[in-house]
Length: 138
Image 1 (tube, helix red, strand yellow):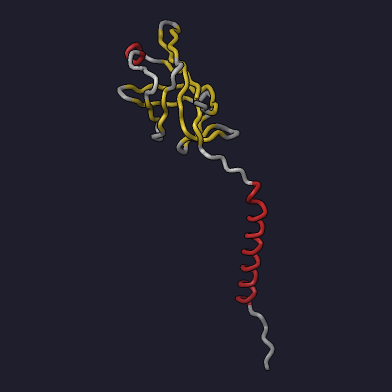
Image 2: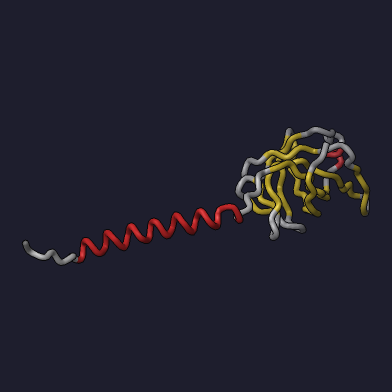
């Protein structure tokens, strides 16, 4: 009988199988240490300049959408303060997403403290300045 010598294709197949097994082992060992953050409900503190007409339309529970279509809901406890004769709305919006070390991810967009976000709601559009995020607990 003739002695068979492995060719290049046989060596590539063996190396591929070894790499797959090594990948499975590494994934199985490191998988428990991976922390997956699930989306949750958060309160976003904000401030916004409004017009007199817009202040009469503000009510708790109003729903707004950002430029990406994510829904935000105005929570109770907001207040309107007049600064230099102009009304400024301060309060919190309820939104769904997750908090990371660098910011807040909502609908594929990352928000940071100090960002300005344009919100569109029923009969009104205004820009809010983000002040911070906290988990929502009803």
